[in-house]
Length: 313
Image (tube, rainbow, N blue to C red):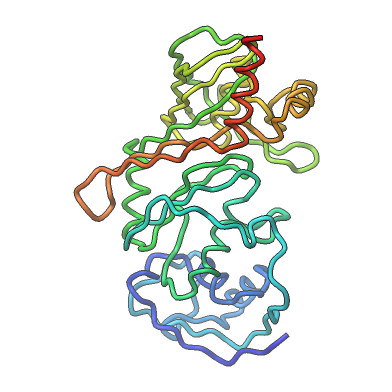
């Protein structure tokens, strides 16, 4: 452990707009969140010499006083699955960074995960003044993940998401005999916690509105490859809508069939078959349309080849 000195930090344009608690968590690396909130409650953190609450949003030119605190001395590199994983960069400029996230890597730390994509990228880019997630992907989903390098870009991208101007297409392989060339699902979703504290989602009339368009790409006996376009961005939306229809995603450990998934593992599919394949949006700082694609991962492509070969025998 080491003790830090008093620090005075002048807030710049790229830091403005953040909540003070989130700002402190990033500044005071190694300090538990509970201690961060204690510093705020007791007035040890001040902005422009005044006490502030945890929900205060920083303004440009604010002067933040950070008290001396004891932080954990870094020892060994993180051992989380995200550590050391090279994230292919699909697109980058002064405003945005889009990577092709592998399956099995969380987008952020927490809930037993020591580090995720955002923590890894911040370590790799220590001089970056700003880096925040534009949206999220489930840990077991691969594909396109966008991050903002400027607060103005983050704000603009979030506005596009709210207004439905961002097109997000996923590839999902479902089990069962899918019949419709196109099928739109509008079924409200509700989040809840299981008895052991695990986050889940189900279709519920009292839930939040959710809209997904499924378009058949290819079918095999017992399987169908779908393009899923999100009209809304609810937690686990594609997975739960497909389960609701009776066509769970192959390899989905939360919403799929355990016995079917065991069979799939024997055939070589050892992950959920859900991939964020295409992302289209208006550049947040320029007048141009950006469309990005991420190729289907090798392990998913290999499984498609396997079922194709089996269906022709």
